[in-house]
Image (cartoon, helix red, strand yellow):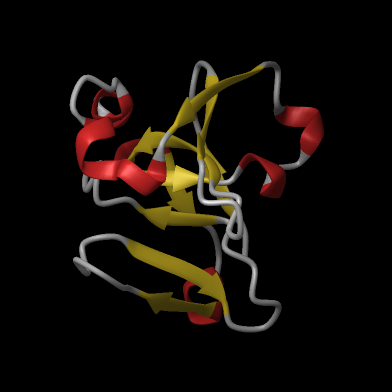
Length: 115
């Protein structure tokens, strides 16, 4: 699965869910491109509210990106799935994913998918 993204700064947001290690940053949909026949390798998983769409490679099981419920107009990208020589800077912000509803209020995460 190959993607192309355009963003000025990579901001990695860490949910405190310790099992999944949800490190990601959000880009607007218009700055995300799924390359070649990559869509044919994806499978989607949803849970709880069903709003977030977690996309996994059906061959290796890796989730390189997903459609977050906080940003339906963007894509959450996992920085560890990007070729490392293309990343200039990473800024880590901590987000309490276990208390998502209260934490999203006052967070700037929703603004990350705006152009």
